[in-house]
Each structure stands twice: as C-alpha cells, then as structure tokens.
Image: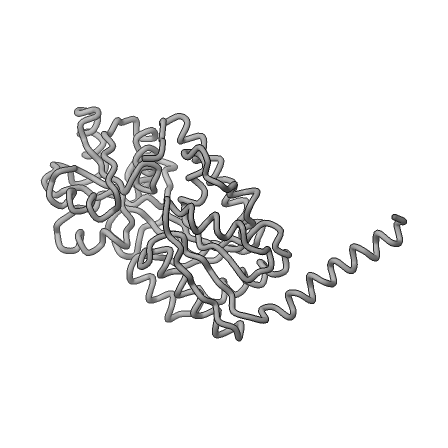
Length: 321
C-alpha cells in the first residue's frame, strides 16, 4: 500500500469513528451489573444511568447478571460486540479475581477498556464495643500483645474487607486471624454479636450500626475523612503513614470499542456525578461519586489495581474460597 493510500485509509477510519460517536447512541445502551441487585455497584450504576438517559436522549438500562464472583456478567460483556451498546459496571473484584482464580475467563486489561470511575467508597475499621480499644493506637498495641488472636470477618477471601485487612496487617506490623463468611451480612451479624472482633467494612453499610452504638468506628481507610464519620480519623492520620484503600466502582467496555464512544460515555458520567441532587443523595449514605478525567487516567488506575493486588495476593497467600 502506498503512503498516500495508507494516509487515506487512516483518515477514513478516523472519520468513521467520529461519525459513529456523532450518531451515537441510536438505540438503548445497556450497563451490565455482574453483582447482586441492591448493592453499591447496582445503585450507583442506576443513579448514573438515570442521569445519562436524560442527556443522551436514549435509555441507559442497568441489567443484573450476577453469579460466580461477578464472572457470569463479566464474561457476558466480554463476548458482546464492541459497538458501544453494552458496558460493564465494575468494582475492585473485577481487577482482583484473575489473580486468585485459575480460569477467570477474562483479562481485565486485555479484554476490556476503561471508561470512567464512578465512585470511591471509604472503608472503616469497626470493632465490637466489648473490645477494649478506643483508637487505632490502642488497637495496634492490643494486636501486638495478642498476635493472631484478634478475629476479623469478611464477605469472603479476596474481597475488599480481606484485602484491606491484609494490607493493614502488613503495614502496621501485626497479625490478625481472618474469618471468611459467605457474604457481608452474616459477618456483620457475628461482629455485632461478638463472635468476631472486627471488620474492615464499607462506610455505607456500617454507618447505622456505629450510629446506634452497636459497633465502634476506629479509623477510615482513605486519605480523607468520611463525611459520614467526620470525627473518625483516617488510618494514615492515626499513625500508619501512607495507608490508603477504598472500594471503587467504574464502567468498562469490551476491548476494541471505538475510542470516541467510551470518551462520550466518560463525559456523560462526569456530567451525571456532578448533578447536585444525585451527589447529595449518595454523600448521605457514604458513597462519594466521582468521574475520571480521561480514559487514559482510568486505564492507568485499573492497571495499578491489577498489578498491586497480584503482588499482595502472592505475598499474603490470598486465594478464592
């Protein structure tokens, strides 16, 4: 092919992408939620989709396809046409599962392209009030006196609470005993009942228990304090310098989707999360909505999560249930 012909070919491809984005969307858009209905991924995706529908002039529908640690819905989206009409709502699980399951059926970096982050949810270290600690310094001191004795519950091996616990233990120089449950609800029930001693839980699900005095909040995992617990310090503030962890939600598309389309959806996401009424609604339940500044920024964010967790899983021996 001559240089002239090659240049014309490149221009035609670029023009087709632009035309696709200009005419897009010509029909309803689907966002697949691979996790349980009613959870944070579900409610955030629905809130964002509702706002997008208003500005795009087409319905943006959230469809639940849960199962097998989000593998069912994730694999489904991987197999859809890369035409911008099927997206995947994701959380930390998306980046972590391939490191702890032998045959996940997808590669988060090769089979998908990032669109935008949608929220960044702080976690909080909560303890049963019977545990004789009032702050992080006292908690670490107790854990060092009783290595491997303090039990922390999680929604399952490799989940957000487990990862936060392993990260914290390594950085604080302590050893905790992991007790995996089949879901967050039974773990919380046992924490309140005193069968386990602590959890790293999302602020949005622990708030009611803390406010009712049934759990005690010791510290939050993000670099900034949570507006839900303004008097609770961050782990970094309380002495474990540099510690930071959170639960993120986002949107990805099948690999090969013309770049103009994810960019359009990223811009729509940014508009959606900036709507004051929506932002206020989620702030009240401890879910700060955000959007990525660019596709490259979110793809770099995903790559960092995939690589960092793979290292942690290897050193901490994290495996799936």
